[in-house]
Length: 202
Image: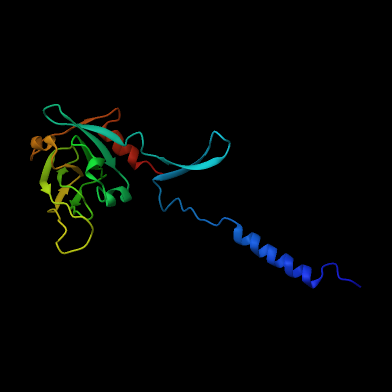
């Protein structure tokens, strides 16, 4: 009696099954690992699908901070832990104009000390209270390409502050920033509403 599946046929089926298994896509997406990023699937014009990363903070990402003179600092908010860890590290001077700033937006007061690993241009670092009043400032902070020491990577003093603003050291706006300077918040969404939005559960 001839077996329905010969030993040779069984061998080929086994190998084919193994190949198909190895070709299956394998991946893991832990939403809790990066809660700030939401992955959506969009349909492209040719009918294929592609993954797109949407920023849940896009409606609050950019604001203007006003100086007492009325001049404005076009400001981007660094909100997530990853953004705040990176800061301006690796950014080239041309990536930020003299009238732009990066605001590290925190939800509570705390001891803030900044350092300058892998930075490519000098900056002013301005420490602010919850109402955006300047309570500490360090100007012309030296840059430090790479992360190797020595020479020592510059570290600021520690300030008890809510937010921290960084602008280019050659910005003319820096001349107006000193202890006690009160900045204004210009956006369709108020400062308190921005904080409430960030506090919303993912």
